[in-house]
Length: 400
Image 1 (cartoon, rainbow, N blue to C red):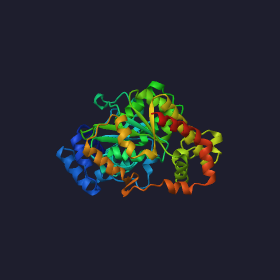
Image 2 (image 1 turned 90 degrees about the vertical axis):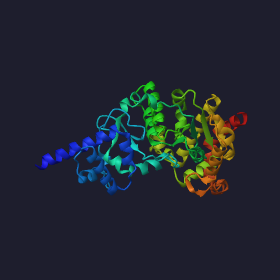
Image 3 (image 1 turned 45 degrees about the vertical axis):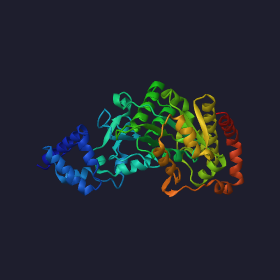
Image 4 (image 1 turned 30 degrees about the horizontal axis):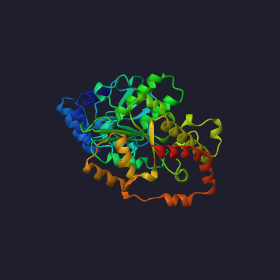
């Protein structure tokens, strides 16, 4: 009898999940409930209204947290082949039991206004609906199953040297409703990493996946999309040719600053890309044995050289941190084809006066402090690995 009850509950849970998959309005109502106990009550009422005889205990268990993180050790299977409704965004690409899968979360109607995409993802993971109704689609057919109405060409792509004002640019853009900005989204980084690390898929497949992932991240969830921009991870500049193939008519921007100040920032808090081996294909065996600071400076030099190549090829414009925020209005908006009225400009100007990574605090110019903090060894690394490519960028900026 107990087996029959459990089987019946499992079947009813499947029925509720099928109903959520088929009804975007139902999903939105459930996603709006953040409190787990209240969610159980609401989900039970919704299920009952649909004739689904499901206990509150089963709903509570399915929507419960995973405090020990046990689920992260499981190799998931896809829950469906097709993309979910437009309220869901991709948040990760992970290995699965039958191949890599794309994980999607419902964001509960919240706009992407956080400094980083991952900030919004952490918040979305706390929505009980996303635990009750996991959505995983196979990466193998990710591009092929993109709905026709989901196709979208971004207004621009923001590349950067890291720690140089790109988050400020993203925050200023995202301040205006209708401006969709995905800032260093992990699922796109996962796609680019797979494309750069010997994945067997051919180049057309890799390009199609990048194009599809950008479209998925910039879905028009509120019906007011006017602008869509992705701020990439800094190392993605090394793959600018792939992005150029995916988006031949999309303007690129590269932001950089005095390399001494960039290196000081990484000395304080190293970025993942500057830690040898953390992003495997960025380091070879000799790099793994190198001084991490030297590895980071060398990598940033490679990024700056790649940016200079893209600028020289006419594929990107470059801007120094020192030119912000004025250049945001004079150069970036026109470059991305963004038309802003006085109210929009005022809103973006206010955002430019905040600390981009901690928007509740005011902006503080940290250039002199970082220059004072720089050691002689760090300055030597800046000269050895970054002076030449930065000089190339400066020369390009002077002629833009």
